[in-house]
Length: 52
Image 1 (cartoon, helix red, strand yellow):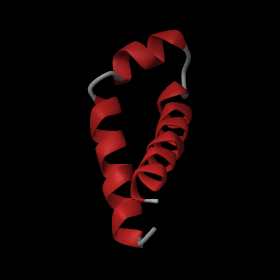
Image 2 (tube, helix red, strand yellow):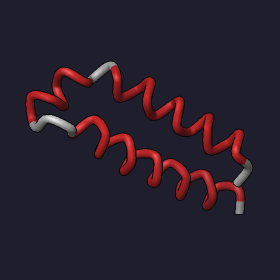
Image 3 (cartoon, rainbow, N blue to C red):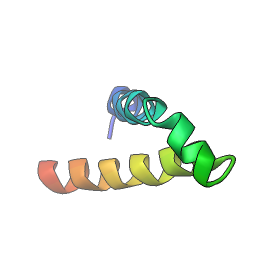
Image 4 (spheres, rainbow, N blue to C red):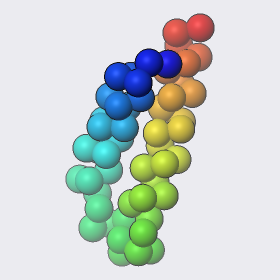
């Protein structure tokens, strides 16, 4: 996957999760960072499967 696609996925995930940052932090401090990683990994897997 090209770097531009990685960047686009990271940006989309960050943008979506930032809308929920207060809720994530109410559950546990630092959950935003962990959620971004998990969601980006899942998004890349879906993208890869879709393009294969």
